[in-house]
Image (cartoon, rainbow, N blue to C red; front, side, top):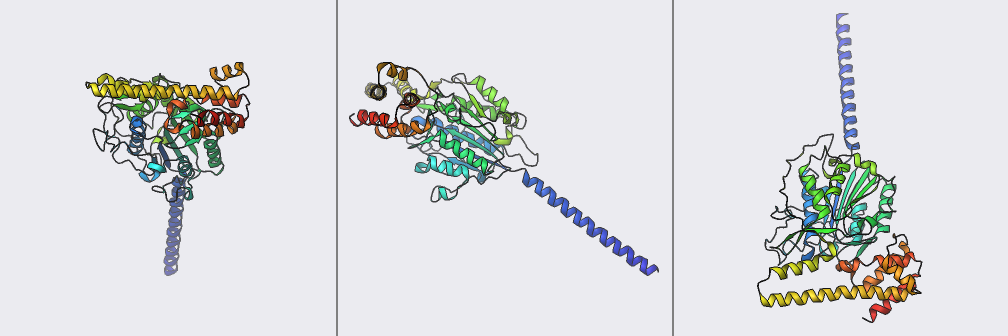
Length: 446
C-alpha cells in the first residue's frame, strides 16, 4: 500500500510539473505575442535637393537621422535618401563634416546613405515607403520600410516645394500621388500610425483637402498652401545657409526634450510659436497629437524608453530668408564680405544674371497666362489671386510641361513660387491643351 501511495504521489508530482511547464510555456508564448503586437518604429528621411546653395536640406536630414539614432531606432529601420554632394564638396571648408547650426557639431557622421545621387527620386521614395522591394531593385542599399499593421512610421521630407509639389533633384512628387500611396498603405495595413514632418514652400498643399482624418496619419508642414518656408543660420565661413526654420525648431526641441513626456501636439505648438516666418500647419488625424514623440522619433519597446541627455543650445540669430531668395542672398552676402575688386565684379555680374533670370520667369508666366485666357479681366484675376489647388488632373500635366519646356522646376525655386498662377488657370477651367500650347509657344520661342 505504501508503495502504491508513493507511486501515486510521484505521478501527481510529475503531472503537476508538466502542467506548470505547459503553463509557463503558454505564459512565455503570450508575452512574446504581446511583445510582437506592440510593433516597431520605422523612419524615412529625405533631402530632395542637391547643390552647395541647398546645403541646409542635407544638413536638416542628417540632423534628423542623429535624433532618431540617438533615441534608439536602429539603422536597419531608418532609410535615408540624400544626394550626398555636400560633405565632401570642394566648397566645404571642413571636408567630411556637415553642421546644422552656427558652430554646431558634425551631423554627417554615421548617417546611412541608402539612396544617393540619381537614386533620389519620387518613385524610389514611394517604393521605399510602401515596402516595394521590386521598385528599388538595383537602386542604392535596397532597404525599404517592411512595416506591418502594428508599426509606427515617421517620414521627414526636406526640400523645395510649390502648390501640390515636392521637388527632388530632377523630378517632382505630386500631392495626389503621395496621398494615393498613403491611402493604399492604410488599406493594406502597412502601419498602425504614420507621421509626416514636411519642410518645403507651400508644403501645406501636399495634404490640404487630400489627407483624410480617419487613416491614422498625422502631418505637419513648415508652411501653409500659399507661402514660402524660410532658410536660416547663414554661415560666412561656408557661404550658405545651415538650416531651415521649421526643421531646426522641431529638431532642436527634440534634442532638448524627454520624448517620452512630450507629445506631438506639444511639439507642434512649440514649433508653430517659434517659427514666426511662416504658418506651421497640421493635417489628418489630429488625435495622434496626443501620442508622445518617442512613439515616432524613438525606439520604445515594451514600455521601456531611456531618454538621452538633453542637448543645450545657446541662442543664435536665425537670419531667416524666404527659400526662393537663398541664392540671391548668398551672392549679396559674399559681395558684402569680399575684399577683392575682381571678385566683387564677378559677384555683381552673377547677381545681375540671377535677377535677369527671375525677371524672365515673371515675364514667361505672365505671357503664358495672357495666351491662355480669353480677356484682360480674366488674365488680371489669374495673375493677382490664389485659388486653392483642386484640379489636379489639369495642374499636373501643365506644370510638368512648364518644367520640361520653360524652366527646370526642381532646380529653380524662384520659378516654383510662380506655379500658383498655373493653378489659377486650371481652377478657371481653362482647357489643358490651351495652357500647354501657350507654354510651348512662349518657351520654345525663348
